[in-house]
Image: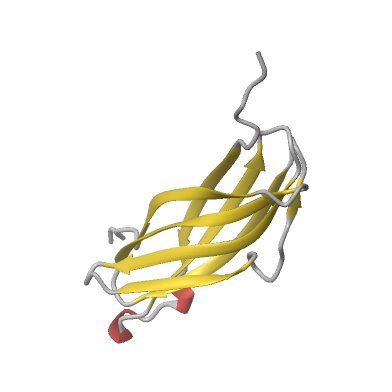
Length: 127
């Protein structure tokens, strides 16, 4: 029996706090996140659009929508991955991000890929 799940896209996220770009006194906390989008399916896909929901500890929500990621609309072949690094600025030491990518296959069929919520947090420094 043929597997009907043609689109198997895995999204992994690594987050890094950037203290050299942050300024605690000004409520400016800068985070970089590296995302790997892996195509574990059978068809070549293209990442068309992104939609992020970024929430800080004060429940201030920023929504970010746009074409592609980091200025690209990457094409990801079966068994391949696309990795990129981007960043965001929060007014608090902790926040969350979640969102989705809109992908398409060669025949033009579009499908969403949900990105599970991940945490942005300043590491606790022990002196």
